[in-house]
Image 1 (cartoon, helix red, strand yellow):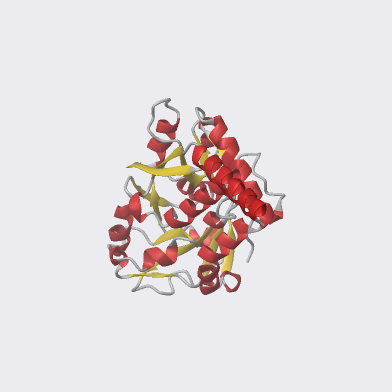
Image 2 (image 1 turned 135 degrees about the horizontal axis):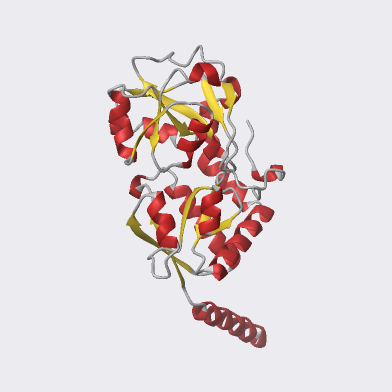
Length: 284
């Protein structure tokens, strides 16, 4: 009995010693929408999950707030101050950084419902196709990939450099609708800045896209480890559990299957996007 206890204690001490020697890995991420980023809690949980599954002791560190264009520039610098950021994929972005081609949002970023002015709750009720929608003006941030996707479909878009400006612009009816992803819109509609706005209940726009972790090309090992961790999480079910915890209720409340779906092409979608793997994508 004594020998068994000694063996167990020795094994425990060796395990603790081994874990103590694992060097922490700093992972500096860009705050592309500041601390108010609606994706932040879910993305940080996914990033931590990837680290855990890969056996990394990550130290997640928020870098300064910057827009997505600057984040891509900083990723390209050896001393740019960030190691990764999360955002919608595009051909240009996949050339500038290492893209981990696992859609963190299962494609939800491409499912869009609109914020509209509260005085016009049925603004989109009669819209049945892109031609009818093109009579209205959308609002977006200038450097968002969504802006080019909407314009490619022939939809007029009014842009600003600052995400926060879009809410007062819509309140003043400078444009008609603000397409938001289904994982953003409910939280945004509840913000004080969205007073006088509401969520349209008639339409859902859909274009194929994915939100990826983009990693600096100076950190290929980190990119490989994070991809390994995400794929392990997909295989053991922890990825899907996390997805449902953060998104399941929101999707149920928006009732996407009851809305009129307007499909749009995505000219920015890289050829390597894994659209054929249905396990990676959400479908109402």
